[in-house]
Amino acid sequence: MPLDDLGHEVSCPTRAQRVVSLVPSLTEALASVDPEAVVGATDWCTHPADLAATRVRGTKNPDLRAIAALEPDLVIANQEENRALDVERLRAMGLQVWVTRIETLDQAFESMDRLFDEALGWPRPDWLGEARDAWGAPPPVHGLRVVVPIWREPWMVVGTQTFTADLLRRLGCCVVPVDTDDRYPTLELASIDVLGADLVLLPDEPYVFTAEDGPEAFTTRTRLLSGRLLTWYGPSLVPARDYLAGVLA
Image 1: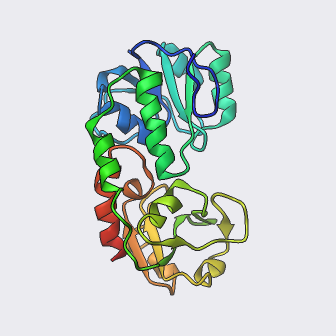
Image 2 (image 1 turned 90 degrees about the vertical axis):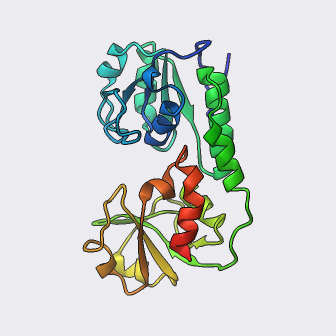
């Protein structure tokens, strides 16, 4: 029996016909191969925009009864994006849940290979190879020190042990370390501005930073950018490298 990324045995179908995805990045990945098989997705699953899937609330508060009512042969979750309690409750309801763990770009590729091969029984999409090729290029040599806020009031930033930080490292950047083991530390605004960063990156998700909401808080130089191309793993990885390199140039 296949094991998910956390080593849990999952009784996977030969070929998944009805899938509920609780991870926006992976919803986009699944829909790139078989959108009709994606019968349920969260409210945050915005890509593709025309996905005709039943919405089952958010990543942190999914409607478990609605998910069960869809009778999926597989539910896709992620260790970081979804609560372990919800995964346990879905399994207690008799549902098969495949949990991914993605903290680096290499893990993203390996996890998605296994997701398509072992969990879904679907062909690997072409974009997976294209993304590997795109990110195989050597990183630029500029050594930028960056801070990436993802929320304000309270201010939260991306930590060094995250997928986003690994993506930025592969672009020659260093996410400024904070004296905490938290993956997404909460800081006072004054603390962020004195971390010694060269650049503050302000994505448009999960908090929607805009030209009028975010840059004014910092004396450090700022750049607005797409949160999807900075934090998602899936088809967005294909254009992400060139896009992010342009933002950082």
